[in-house]
Image (cartoon, rainbow, N blue to C red; front, top):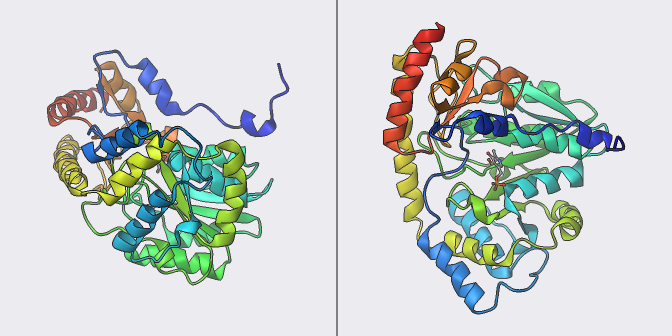
Length: 373
Ligand code: PLP
């Protein structure tokens, strides 16, 4: 059994899984990348109604039901001031499939994809799956991606650059000036910008802006999902939107690898996007309170951590052996190197867990910090 593709041989199993597996059952898990809130009731009910009516039984159009694509277009008008034709939206199996389609449709063998390091684990993996070459770019000290560093990394072989704000694993939110710069780079260098906006709604300071607002060319596509904003990771529902020709190319891949996103999940997503949004606000308020507690705790134990302005992650700089020491004491965190070479010396903490456990975890981390320093 040696005849595996070279592309897949370059993809490793995510380091995050390994950490989960090493943790005991009673461990406090700060490794999780999903909100600890239920899916809004009205979203669930929309799926139940669709199932009971028999609407979830069959394939939908490849792009997804028109009601969902209209709800997504409406969301972009409401939140991003964008005028998007529902025909230029594909409902996907989570943001993950949307990223996959973007890569498959735009990256040729040997072409380069630029992305943040540390960054979301799929960027490197999906670049390899598409036959491309990863070009990770180290972050600034505040863990944001520097547009100048992206611009410098562009070569004749660059197929795309990926930005992710708010960011995983950093919690960093790019400034509006940065976002404008990314749009300019996409325009001037005629290179595709894939904007991963799955944490769009989880912002505590500043505001979420998308390069699609500012770009003058057809070089921006947005990847988004219901997963994080509506606590719907299990439903597997995301989308990609962009200029018609790009969507048409992505559809060529989607129609054969997925046919369509799960029909009941599409109804749930339509319910989430077009129903009341108060559950999002409540979740974001809870995340902000926890963020403050985590930030205070880490700072107080002497660790340096840029203030995370969004998502539900904090990424402190940690002494060598810290993550292992913390894990041995019963708290799961993810070592920074799981997110790229430049993640070394950091750890990612997810605060998508209840306040009591968080406070307990902070005390354990305090002891671990004292032990390794
Ligand atoms: N993009 C980022 C930055 C993520 O953190 C994740 C999930 O963790 C995804 C995309 C994929 O999301 P989904 O669960 O919708 O596939």
